[in-house]
Image 1 (tube, rainbow, N blue to C red):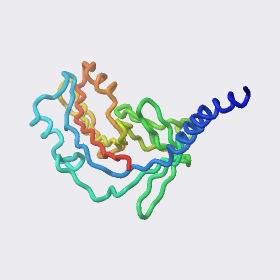
Image 2: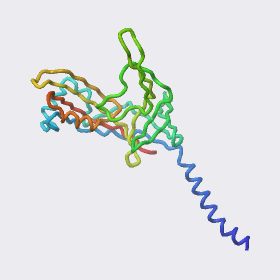
Image 3: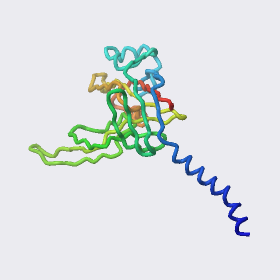
Length: 226
């Protein structure tokens, strides 16, 4: 009777071993450059989305190099990605290899560097959607007051989209005007690994006494599993 029971258990145990072995064989996974996905150049101001494309084109005049064209190509992306495990990965080409800790959160894949960086410059930007997961800001005394220093682990930000890894790039031009129409400030950022923060778009549409205009483009470099 016991031998019959043992024989009945054998197929079940083999099935469990198969499940375990399949889990172990999920890694390594490899991804290679596939294509460029070029986004629309669009703009917002207090009154909402800018619908006149000529206004957008005039706004970015002189900074066109910040933005990709529909036929954008580059020979610089002969890069592959290897997921060594669920929490480790490397990005490499024929010359360089970089290792990262991998953290996944709501469709975002953070490739976090292993070494901490310290800086007196601002690390976060309210216009951008993503920021480092590890960030500590400290106030230190100086000759004319206190200064803030930040220690953080830099990240590359990827989007996991239906089995593809998409590396987002944001370019934007922003100008702020007073209620009388005079220019107060302006800034720009070209081809930076991030995305626009939707909360910032909502914020500028609620301003009353100043006019904040931002024109931006989101592009992606797509990696496919091989």
